[in-house]
Length: 117
Length: 271
Image (cartoon, rainbow over all chains, first blue to last red; front, side):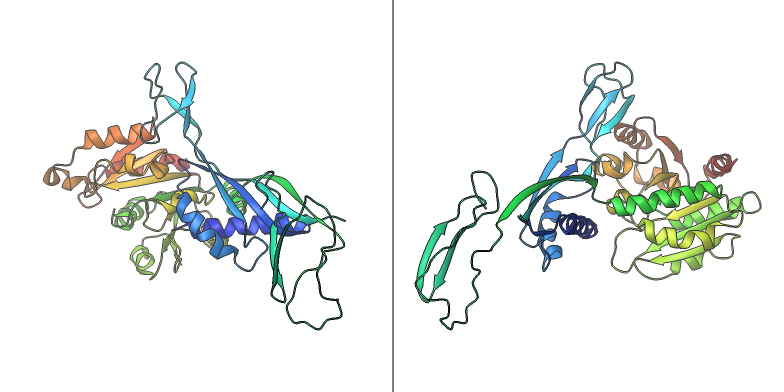
């Protein structure tokens, strides 16, 4: 259940961004979660409000954008989406592929409510 | 939240002394909303009168790793290890794969050949550290209490006391868990995934997060394979499916099968 650590790290970073911008409230947070990140989006979604309680992030909506695994074939150069349980090139069948996406666990954007000054 | 543009202006519904009215605020506009009682009227309920400043909603691009704090510490650990000439391997597997037993035999085999240290992580007890004592290596236990993984900060704190002073190879025995430890970079040189013959041959495809991240895999308890109808070829194929080109060791720490190749490999790592 490392999603708790992930949720804590996430809220910490959102709080830092909100403080920097003098925001009074965080409205929405968009994160990307790769198929090979090892993170369960549902677990993260349910822990997020618990961790965010009593912070400016408390009522924020958490939007999770999934990212598929992608490989680049070293034999034919093709780049394509791949099954996480079977990384190979669908065109030439080569298993000599390099993982180029799927490990993401990033904050993309934070939507903040800020007093106009 | 506004359904049209996603801004934070709420359709407000509130009550003034039993008079309920709802009104729609327009975007970003500062305005007074009149109500029937005078403002010197003593009343207890708090309500926000229209602020002198209106609010705006702004979207800020962050584009940061969620675990950036851990990753930054991991990079510090990596730099420290490099500066001190230490190769660090992060051993990850499910509980019961035989990580500690393999380490016991490994430390005995490497004794007098290369200088080793061990950081071992469990939720509770220092049983593993005690098992590994007296084999010529510095050993430290991390009790994670409730956490299911080691993090870079826990490891970084121990590095100066355990891995300085000529240590060449640091084993980090992670908490037994196939999922969580894979997400936390500790600053290791690389990860080693372990899998025993008492587990299914399909573990690699069931848990691709770990097995795709480890350039080296160790199949343990190989002496049991014949008794378990465990098919090594299937397992190797599954490992290659999630990590093309993975380097695979087959061994039994108990019988010594495959241990020589494993020990030679570790010695070559630090040369």
